Image (cartoon, rainbow, N blue to C red):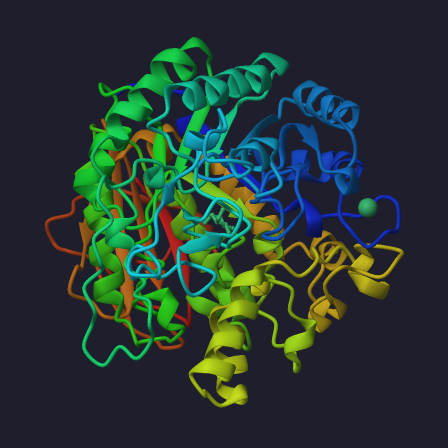
Length: 562
Ligand code: GLC
Ligand code: CA
């Protein structure tokens, strides 16, 4: 058992634009985060992950960076950042930055120089190709716009952009580019930041050739979205090992890679403790579970057995090899309680049940802002209320090119769109949820009237107070962090249950995933003298006979087995 602070930590993700606005311009900012540090301290989280705060034209809300060394004016100044970091550190809270180095903004000086002429010294920092028969070099579809290729009129070549055309992809094969990135990372680490969440990091190595993607049957669109070609390509491990050698290994930090499309075998390579790449990665299998492929913008029904199979696979495969990250939502995904729980009658119970899972599985839990008060998806009536580039581009293509009914396109955005997670943090029942004294950059979710931090602080049984308790338990029980995961009742369609075991210390976790009353039957081989209830989202006397439990909707219980 290899102890590390980042294995014991609980991370809280902040989407700064929507967290707290300190100066009434409608946009969350660094001083706003500073004002809420006490709230975060009380919640008990150890690390804050800030979504990008660098200078950016904001085509993709900061994921298009024009200056890696500067802070977006709307968020504050470098001095504000230094003050935030110092204040957080003085409270024992670490801060990790979002590192976006698969692409820059097209307004980054590198790109401006690169596109100025074919002979520019920076030309090779990006990926350029000639036209093929007067058109794009291949049929690859991008995340946000039809093709991954954009024509540059002046220099008569296409450049590659997996995301928007304002996010040109960097060419990691260029050693001078890599050096500049490592220097930049060191600059932030020398300032005292505690690590990085690395944006689409497994896309930095590109295929040498750019073959057409296989066209699925009945595919009507001109371009084919085929991430298998964009991620996990040869060369990726060499880049990460070099980055580790040159930068990461010199600091006591944590790293987590955003790695779309990874399998557990790949994750072992990225996170293997003897491989010197990353500490952990975000897996996407669970995120694909109900919409199969997100780019299709549709849900498919999922079964709990399927969900558990994915979880158990990641838990067991990485056991004593690498380390898991645990999350059910973030700024790119719908709200956890709306997607995997029940955001109506059992909102509170199901949010607590899911939280119980996130804090009792093996790995580092990531809480996304608002999750701790059970914030839900939003459903704006008009496309004009949406801000997310991905949703807006989807709508435009679906309605204007694919002739999809606008109502259905809007409904798809209601279910899957990224703005579900980006409405302002709900601090109180005051106007605009207490997020801003001005006009918010995106509308608040109207349910702030009853779902907000102030309410949650006053209610002893709130989701917020439950999170605090879970975080404290994690601190108290080593087995919650380091214990081995042993799944139980694997074929059960309603109940997720497992044991965590560390030496003689054992926890039993029981989670009812639906609005039903299934019967939990303790496997007979499991021996114990006493079962002590550590936490539950329902009242129980704690003395129940655990060999047989009739569970209430979304009930969660964690026992210590003695
Ligand atoms: C990641 C980010 C997402 C962004 C994309 C491009 O997936 O999480 O928000 O749009 O990368 O940078
Ligand atoms: Ca502001």
